[in-house]
Amino acid sequence: MPHKDWIYPAYRIIASCVFQEHGIPTDMGYAVAPHHSGVYPVHSQLYEAWKSVWGIKVTSTEEYPHLRPARYRRGFIHNGIQVLPRQTCGLFTHTIFYKDYPGGPQELDKSIRGGELFLTVLLNPVSIFMTHLSNYGNDRLGLYTFESLVRFVQCWTHLRLQTLPPVRLAHKYFQIFPDERDPLWQNPCHDKRHKDIWSKEKTCDRLPKFLVIGPQKTGTTALHSFLSLHPAISSSYPSPITFEEVQFFSGPNYQRGIDWYMDFFPVPSNVSTDFLFEKSANYFDTETTPKRAAALLPRAKIISILINPADRAYSWYQHQRAHQDPVALNHTFDEVVSAAPSSPASLLSLHRRCLQPGAYSSHLERWLHHYQPSQLLIVDGVQLRSGPAQVMDAIQKFLGVTPYFNYTQALTFDESKGFWCQKLEAGRSRCLGKSKGRKYPDMSLESRAFLSEYYREQNVELLRMLKRLGQPLPVWLRDELHNASWS
Ligand code: A3P
Image (cartoon, rainbow, N blue to C red; front, side):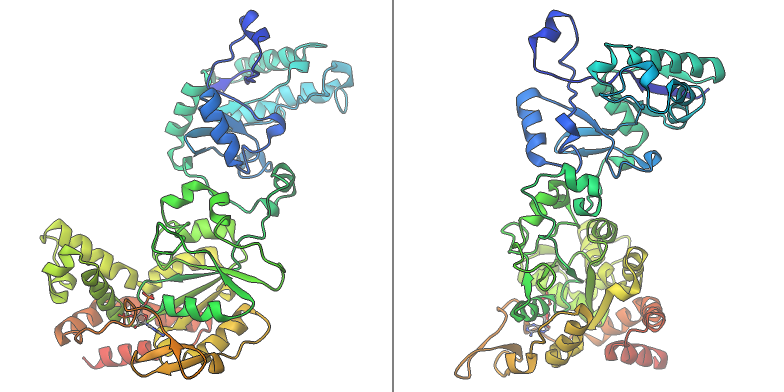
């Protein structure tokens, strides 16, 4: 027999001793914000205040992810406070007399007797409603509505109705819906109600117009520095905690919320012509990133750089060694790539982290699940390295950024570094630091042959995908597949 958890009526916490005098429970760990403000879209200060002043653990909202359609309302947990989805019961501050119910009293009765309110209880395993004090005075429509509803449900269904106090109800809710714990942040300015609820002090302009998603070791730092030379393009501020990159969508920073994210961006002087961007190279291959990025930045453009996945893996391995990773220091590259399931866990972990980002077509498919092909640009990393000015021209076109910036004049090839760098006055140049463009021996032929085979299927898929998308084929991919077909 199906059962229902049902909380009736919702509790409002008002710091007043009047409630205590009358035995009305006020210390239930549950609160609803005045005018619903700040529960969603999240106003971080509200959560902080609730936690530190009243020890609030549970709240509810009708707004996550949106007010309508009501059946899509979901819960989430933010900053330790469990937010439950709230349903609408049709009683508001102004609906206090039966005969004056909007559309006539029959509308309220219809909703109870098989209509919307009945269906809400029928279709939601957990229903939370909020009524107002005024619904308990006057014609007591609060009592009338819910008593009638309970009678109707009991008469016509086998549902077992239960009520639970808020903290236990929240526990139960997230037991039933464990996938809902992590919120999916959206742009508050894309929903008029959300914009109105949000603080007037806040703006949605401090969000990137495009993302450079990686993967790591393909030239993402070079691209970031070239982009930053453009007068209309501004990067996020460097993060002191995650190697300069913001890494919002890919890990625990996401739980900090969009205020935290927006603080990494300057307020643009002209929203339509200024291009804010962010580069986090692990976005490319982290499973949750495309979905989260598309929820907050559905119109963003996405730039990925690809080099031969074997070269990428080797560069990453050298990077780990340079950072004194003990497993990389103790194992040759050949050992890392050919690690078998029986190898030590630490070696297997390095093997996975080294090779997994190179499964390019699988990762890109995930991005294409959330973004239109026209929003995605795949840059050939070999070309970026050998002729960045042409690549930067293509990127400017893809972004639609103006004014045109002449990278042929802005960049120069630095012989001693062996890479393209920013051209300064008097024949000088500014190159990336020592950690980019490292010197190390060539990859062994055995490892190259092994990785060629290892990535063959993914590379073939990538070729198909790029043809399907009408994107140019990187020279390294043609070479790789051509060589592989002869081996
Ligand atoms: P190596 O150090 O293995 O040569 P990322 O910035 O994504 O970590 O990528 C680092 C790689 O960018 C370097 O790998 C280097 O080959 C490549 N790169 C491309 N253009 C570069 C440039 N102008 N200066 C330095 N490195 C560049």
